[in-house]
Length: 207
Image (cartoon, rainbow, N blue to C red; front, side, top):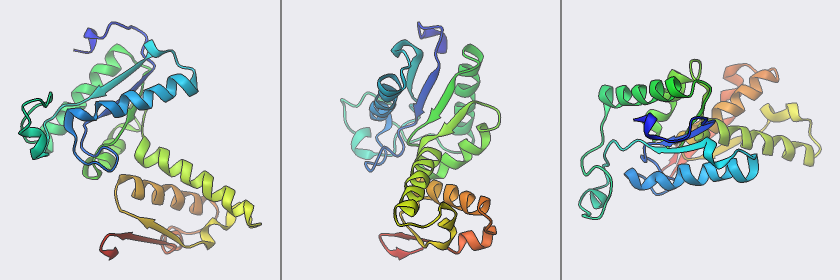
């Protein structure tokens, strides 16, 4: 199926399964706007030619009953694929794009928390890939906090002396925590010391 795409020199693929689109939840195939939008940034800000990017939505169904019952919904009107069949489908996709474009960067975008980290762990060492929600948000937050430390006159290696409150335990929130913890460890804290600085809350309070 990847050979249906007419361009032979794809540099970046942004892929989602539509399971956690922004704060809107499961949008199924309607999540296609997110990969298109993200790749527009690669083109406008990164200078990558538009014919060298490819937006993809893996339509594995949706658990959004409103969409499933909508006769105008363009995606599969069936419950989401889960478990082994789901991961086999993603594996087939990853192998296919790597076979056609061996050096392509695959950006995982807006996968739900129950799958995002597993997919990142599986492919990060074998494919040129990253998860924007986990790694991109974490790196941006780390840069912001280091700038904030400088602004208040503290050294950047004082990160481990702060108290970090994270609202929400989704893939982005946990990704931020992981990146900040890694930075603290690199600055000399033990993993236990670094973990003790974090407080994660959701709508029900402290987790």
